[in-house]
Every structure is written in C-alpha cells, then in structure tokens.
Length: 123
Image 1 (spheres, one colour):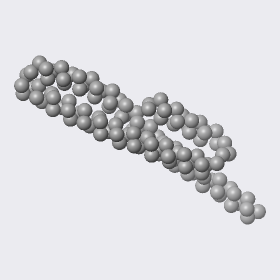
Image 2 (cartoon, helix red, strand yellow):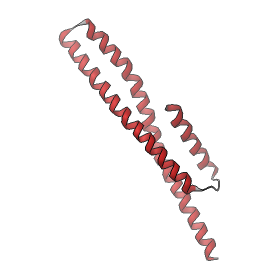
Image 3 (spheres, one colour):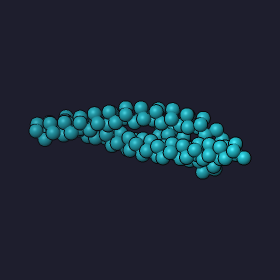
Image 4 (cartoon, helix red, strand yellow):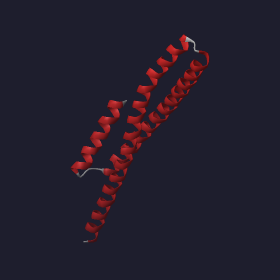
C-alpha cells in the first residue's frame, strides 16, 4: 500500500507541476476516488494500530502486576508489531493530507480553465 500511495501521489504531483492542458475534471474525479480508497485504508489501519497499542499497554500493565515471564514475551511481540503499524499509519496519514492539497490545486486548475474559456467565449 505504501508503494501504491507514494506512486500515485508522485504521478499527480508531476501532472500538476507540468501544468499540462488536460481534462482536469476527469483528473479530479479519479483523485476523489483515490482519496476515498486511501481514507478507507487509513481508517482500517487506525483501528488496527489503536487496537495493538491498547493490547500492548494492557500486556505491559499485567506484566508489571504479575511479573509473568510469558507476558514479557507477549509484550515484546505486540510492541514489535506496533512499531511498524505506527510507521505505516504515519505514511498513510501524511500522504492523504498531501492529497487534500493536490485536490485544492486541481480545483484551482479547473477554475482557471473555466475563467479562460469564459473570456474566450466573450471575445
């Protein structure tokens, strides 16, 4: 998923940087669809990350209370899984936030193209 979101974001960044004449309405429609996909992925990973964080904290608390060696292994295992989940969620969150900025830029391109076409139609 990380590779997919980064590739997509870079493609849209390149398209916006070129300023090419293209069908910005179609780009906007695709972009909204992609944002929806990534938002869903972000929500799922938030739920998983929070669940692992709660389980890790509970395991650590029980470890401190009981001092069972098995809970030490469980806590370390949960912590080992939690760290990559946090890193992945961080990437998803930042990339989706960047995509919101891209959305605004696409809207500006559409607005600018409508302004130019209205001026041309009046001449």
